[in-house]
Amino acid sequence: MGPDANQIVSKVYKAKNDSRAADELIAEYMPFIRSETAKFLNRPPNSSDDELSIAMFAFYESIKNYSRLRGSFLKFASLQIKNRLIDNFRKEKRSKGLISLDQPDEDEKNELIDTISDEHDEYAESELREATQQEIAELSAQMTDFGVSMTDVADNSPRQRRTLEICNKAVRYARNNPEILADFLRTKKVPISRLAEGADVERKSLERHRRYLVAVLLICTNGYEIMRGHIMQVLKGGEE
Image (tube, rainbow, N blue to C red; front, side, top):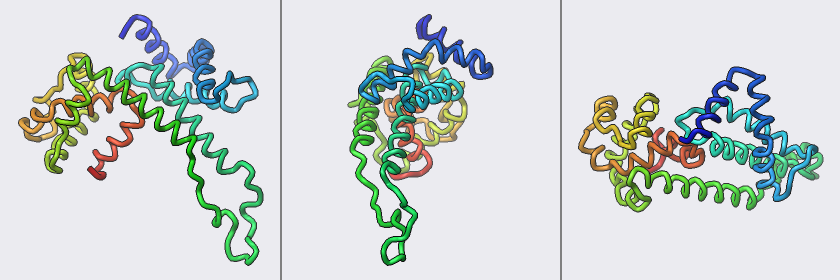
């Protein structure tokens, strides 16, 4: 992390508990907030756009929720802004032009809102795909610093549910002990011994899937919101 990045992080941590510092940080990064809003609108925002206010609030939320373990603050804030704007777009699309949805239909057995099927939100899905592709590209680039490629991860992923659960226990233990994640990012090495002992799992199984653990630990520490949501489902016992 370079000097400029360290300076931003210091300002963010100060702004977490200082409303004046938060206001100053938002003012300083208004060009960034406007730029992220423009990407979503496909045009420069103006002061009357609700999206600009939503983006400013998302930036403030990013200040409150940011941790050094999430990696670059601006990448984290960018994703938070995009997610907030997508959520707002979906809400507006559901309500736009739908008048008297609560009035009964002609036979008065059902409310109109119950007869309307959800539309396929192609725009939002396109945004989600783009955001996911961006996360994958960033993750792939970061993994090269750890000597691991996407192909390595695919070849090294657990194939048996028992082995997957062993790896998941190790990841859950790491998430509950942030100092382990911090050491992982600093040394660029998976702390196999500490994970095996702390999670009470077989060291050999972790050794065999070291490259897979690199990817999952990075996803859990560096602001990859979309992929982390999927990973968390797996860690909580979701489908393999």
